[in-house]
Length: 170
Image (tube, rainbow, N blue to C red; front, side, top):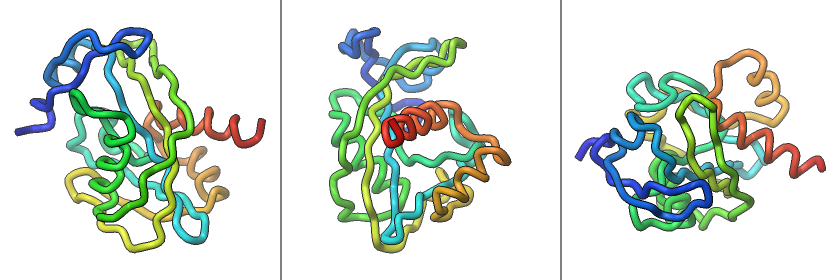
């Protein structure tokens, strides 16, 4: 099954399930759905950053400081966070990510999804999926800040990062 054929829950403005549809149809129709974002740190506190492959359905070739993705139909946010983090990092045995907060992402151009943000520490090696990740590295938060001014980032990740930073400094 291709990524476009994956079945997702369609949700309303209150994050209640109102139906199901193929991922490709959800994207094409601008239907609200669910996503997870996982902030991954290594033993030294550095942040996992990656550049998405050019073949991604959404935000191809852009940088991201979160791993994650869509929540499958009937899947919980917590289960999706663990699944997506293990898949994108290419690891097994990841501790269950800690839930931090949830927000409604809306770019004003038909891309809207409920976004649950998590955090996890991983001290082992990573082997990201080649079909998902074109480049990766663990960067200090200062290096991430420099990258924010130099690289093109996924807009939903920037929204999640802004909220995460506000929670940590506020």
